[in-house]
Amino acid sequence: MILDSVEDADKVAANLAFSVALYSGQMCTAPQNFYIQKGGIKTSTGIVSFDEFAQKLADQLNAIADNPKAGPFVLGAVQNKKTCERVTDAEKLPGKVWLKSRTFENPMFKNARVATPVLIEVDASKKDIFSKELFGPIALLIKTKDTDQSIALAQEMALNYGAISCGAYTTDEKVKEKIADEMSLAATPVSFNLIGGIYMNQHAAFSDFHVTGGNPAGNASFTNPEYVTKRFTWVGIREPVKA
Image 1: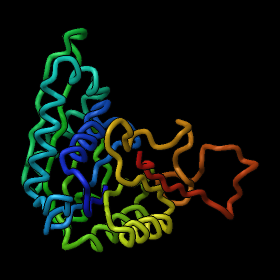
Image 2: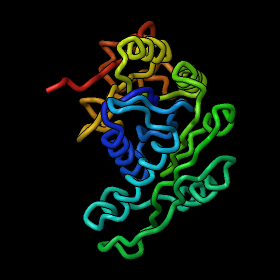
Image 3: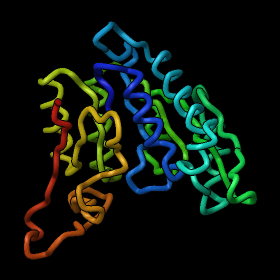
């Protein structure tokens, strides 16, 4: 996720919190790395600082977990106990813990293995931390120098370690074009400015059409082979149409 500028920071935080919480981050398309410039996020009403946005995201995650009609059913169960151990270990990473993971009660499955997401601030210099897949409900807020560094890091991670998808928030057309170009070169589809009921996790119109085959996330694309040869990869860009 690359966060440059937004119309409404609260709507963005709500959308991202749901993406992190859904299935307790156990989807291959669940977001993990959130690149945010240290100067904050530009909005229609002024700058939202890095810390303010981190708190908004933490509050939204708590709101999901604490809602008895939503939390247990959005988060679901954690399939493997090693995932819970990974969440506990994540809280020991070098960086500020904005939100610790906790358990909750699922009214339908009293003995379910559960864990709410952990939210951790990490400096952009700590590539050894965010270059790994931390499977499960773990979100890293990576503090960058500026949006250019955010884009460069997102592209570097995709090229070297793979990425199924990228999400980006910007109200600047030139920044949008740069993100689309740079992530396309890393064979990573981009979803721009998602809010409301469309989420990063819903990567494509057809559920099996993820992985472009163009970066280390996968060496094949799940699509009809008649349309793809080894000379080509397919990269999609999407953006909601304004009402």
